[in-house]
Amino acid sequence: MECSWKTVLLLVCASLGVQYTAIRTLRDSLSVPCPGAYSCQGRRHRESRLLCDSWPSPDLPRRHILLFATTRSGSSFTGQLFNQHPEVFYVFEPLYHVQQAFTNSSSRVRRMLDRRALLGAYRDLLLNLYTCDLHFMENYIHPEPQEHMTSSLFRRSSSHALCSPPVCAENPDTVLEAPDESWCPKKCGALNFTLASVSCLSKGHVAIKTVRVPEVGDLRTLTEDPRLDLRIIHLVRDPRAILASRMTAFADQFRAWKIWNATGRQPRYVDLTQITSTCKDISASLETALQRPPWLRGRYYLVRYEDLALNPKDKTEDIYRFAGLDVDQRVLTWINKNTNSNNGSPSDWNYKYSTSRDSRAAAESWRLRLSFDIVRTVQNLCNHTLSLLGYRPVHSATQLRNLSQSLVELRTFQPIL
Ligand SMILES: *[C@@H]1O[C@H](CO)[C@@H](O)[C@H](O)[C@H]1NC(C)=O
Ligand SMILES: *[C@@H]1O[C@H](CO)[C@@H](O)[C@H](O)[C@H]1NC(C)=O
Ligand SMILES: *[C@@H]1O[C@H](CO)[C@@H](O)[C@H](O)[C@H]1NC(C)=O
Ligand SMILES: *[C@@H]1O[C@H](CO)[C@@H](O)[C@H](O)[C@H]1NC(C)=O
Ligand SMILES: *[C@@H]1O[C@H](CO)[C@@H](O)[C@H](O)[C@H]1NC(C)=O
Image (cartoon, rainbow, N blue to C red; front, side, top):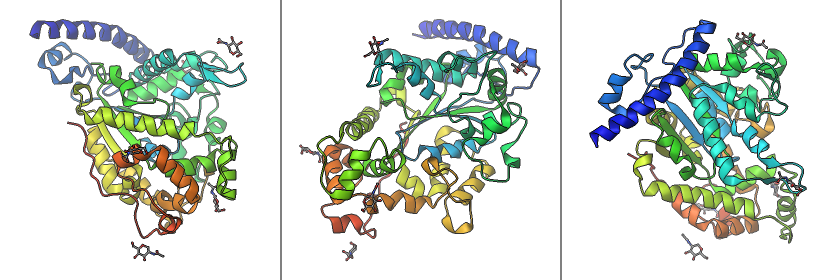
């Protein structure tokens, strides 16, 4: 037992050594400091400590945070809680490019070419980003980057590190106007992946937000990877709210739902599969987590967006405690500015992905924006998910609109230990 552990660790550290050499070469060639660049975590085993003592800053454990969410579940807002931290290298949905590369764009109905291979590619990219090899992204970007440069990185402006020195000469903090989605590529020019890797290495921790991994079980090999200290924050939200938000953000795709909402009659061609699979994925993850498998211990924390919206500061502290990091003052300042509507903070700078709004009111507003008929349909499709997460169903239109009755049951979800 002991022996096989040592063998495994030796192998792991040997393979790490190869990667570390590559990183050191990159670092040396650029001669920048990189605190805590890469520490062999070895999951608290003394043998690994000894083996890895010569690694940079072993006393500064590098955290790998995954904000694991669903489209329109409040993940842009929640991602900011990490993006604002000066020691966190934050990347917003890097898997977008992988999905694009795996989608057959020539067929009339765009579809995935191979789900298993896609999930494998997702994990590969996440692992490479967590270890600051940003060049790995280049494989999936279209048009193909030239000289390690691209102008096509998806939502680059959402990442503080990719829009500030050394990657960009401008600093977003000096941009007085609230930045919009296009400011960063405009001010900073094409993205240099080598500089992005350098920036990543210079930060203590990496956080990634994605809405493209279906279930937590799809992340298992990453939680078991001894090179990572992965902390999964599973962000969930009331599926009825998710639907209302998608109807607003993706109006074209949800035209049939909007007709249904406006006329009170369900069109025959309305597509129920998207919301159904969202609910199925959430409950599948939850059921996996409830079994407390060893590979999730210390690595999984379920967060309801509504709880975060109601109590942003306390919940942020819980999230950071789970991640094993201290909340930075910049994070608290950002929360104060962006969760309270009557303080003159900038109004919606990008409607679709805005995070500047009264988070508490926004979390409940779906109840005034969906017809009761639609709500009842979603409740039937998602009844299991609703009950697992503690969201109450409504039984009449009056009850739906009566905001003094909360539909969010008081529940405490603890990290899996
Ligand atoms: C993409 O879809 C088109 C049309 O359905 C099909 O002819 C083609 O073979 C597909 N390509 C791949 C790589 O599957
Ligand atoms: C990207 O940045 C690296 C490191 O500063 C530099 O050596 C390289 O020339 C840059 N690439 C381009 C195309 O400017
Ligand atoms: C649904 O209809 C109501 C009333 O007609 C409207 O106020 C609301 O904005 C609509 N919701 C969406 C998501 O379009
Ligand atoms: C959900 O609905 C199904 C079918 O109507 C029912 O069998 C099941 O018990 C319901 N589950 C919950 C948790 O309410
Ligand atoms: C709204 O709910 C509250 C609390 O359950 C109740 O006291 C009140 O009568 C309800 N209002 C309406 C208009 O139904």
